[in-house]
Amino acid sequence: MRKRTPQEKKELSYKRDRRNVYGEAPHAARKNVPLRKAIRNRANRHVANQSLSYQGPAPDDDLADELESRIHHRAPHEWEKMPHAPLGEVIDYKSRKRKSIREGDSRSLGYLGKMAA
Image 1 (cartoon, rainbow, N blue to C red):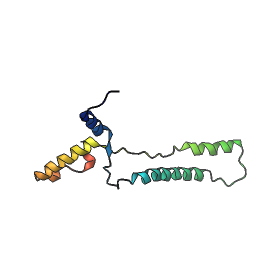
Image 2: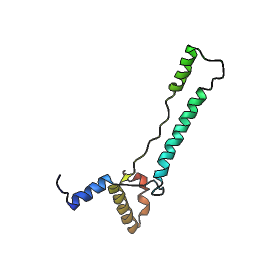
Image 3: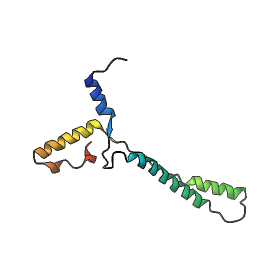
Image 4: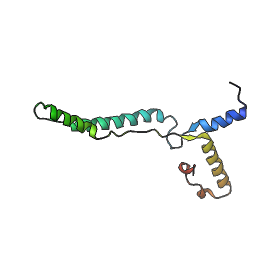
């Protein structure tokens, strides 16, 4: 593997590195990602347990099959992580924002969530 020039390293850094643009604390994702997954899994287990709350006598084979199919009938909700914004886009947005503020037109940019537009 050949050595990369500083310019190539910088370009790769702008593409690969990510920055948090959601307004949360920088290290909050370490806690929030497992928390969101746990909450979603708890909700799915809750729905499965509610559909299994059968209080009658021991079920025969047909009833057992119906109860099992009730559990799998509803697809569980899933939680997905959203990627942070690429460093290059964040820097581009911030430089455009600084420029517009210097020119007195700070309302034209909108918020960081629209930076890709």
